[in-house]
Length: 83
Image 1 (cartoon, helix red, strand yellow):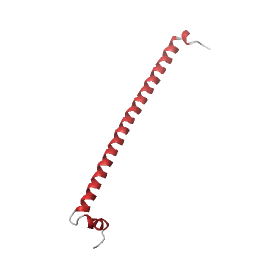
Image 2 (spheres, helix red, strand yellow):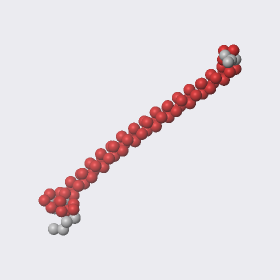
Image 3 (cartoon, one colour):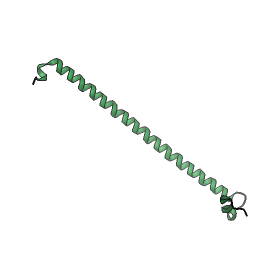
Image 4 (cartoon, helix red, strand yellow):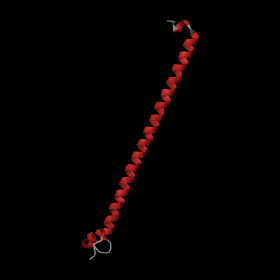
């Protein structure tokens, strides 16, 4: 079995392959890190949008309950029940 130290060209080729694979692994890890950051950002944005939408819906429902008829008749307005 030949030793790499006795064949400089093979050692050089081996080193180049190791360097290439190392850089490839680093690029893959960096891409995964960026993808994770984007996913985290998207999740936060979706959560914030859902909270804002729920707040707006609740505010709208509260306004519908109290508009024109007052609180005692508001339930009938929401369920579209005639008086």
